[in-house]
Image (cartoon, rainbow, N blue to C red):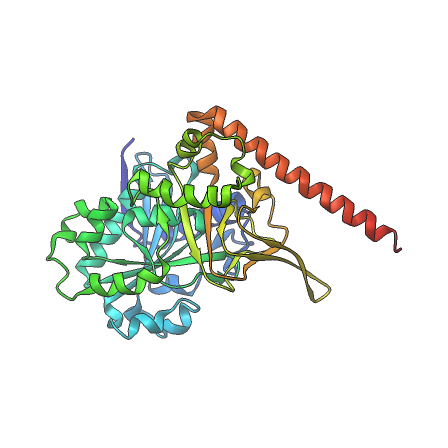
Length: 382
């Protein structure tokens, strides 16, 4: 089915975009962004006033996706309007007209993983390059970091806790860094705008230097043996199996982990927030996190999570909201697994997927037993 990407230049199309956001963010994902207008059933915020809004339509004219682009030069106070994103750091190097911010990327479920995403980003990328943009800023939930890295974005600063959105990873794309676009095998490399010289301003060198401290691991950016070498070593460290992968052969584990990304996190990063509807599963490869809950204005420490621990399992298996905060205590590396990963595993490695789900059920059963035991102990003092 043919698709077309339009610049929303009529009030009617822009309002249709606001309504699509509501359908996806609120009705499908269960999010509660501050900008949601439940009476009008749309999501619109202050950035929309000066933004370029892109719409993807199918051949019947039905809106199936959207993306927003703001140039910082069009904002009256970008440091405030885009807080807490690290805008000041970017403005030290780039003039406002050379920085853009993309956001509100969304597609209806039937169009995810297909051509619509590439069409959206190619149109947005070309328009930004033509307007003189040199670097684009976005933020992604952990489960989408892999996708953005495939496009050529890189992590460059600590993760952020955004109200109504949850833990997000800020990412940057240097539009004319052809070397990195090649390394990422980015579809943007095919756009004519990417061929306008080999980064005459040296943005690639600057980008590489600031991204180095936050380098994670994406299976698509390294050779399979290199990815497995890093992740497999963490899984096997100390000859102690990580419970989630217990009983899987190395061959099965390698097959399962053909897809995945490893995030490097800093102390204080809020990996999970209570009440969030996010659905990633995290496996601690290195470092320590703490589980907290808020009760009557007090924060209660529930557990420490060390190497091998998993968290986020309830959202991963269904659509349950997160039941507690999980905060990084030390520098960490966490393997992020998504529901898309689970669905692919069930289709292509059903035996290994069955073992993984069995292990996950055993983890949940053990936690339930521990909780029951605690409740029994507390009942003896009442």
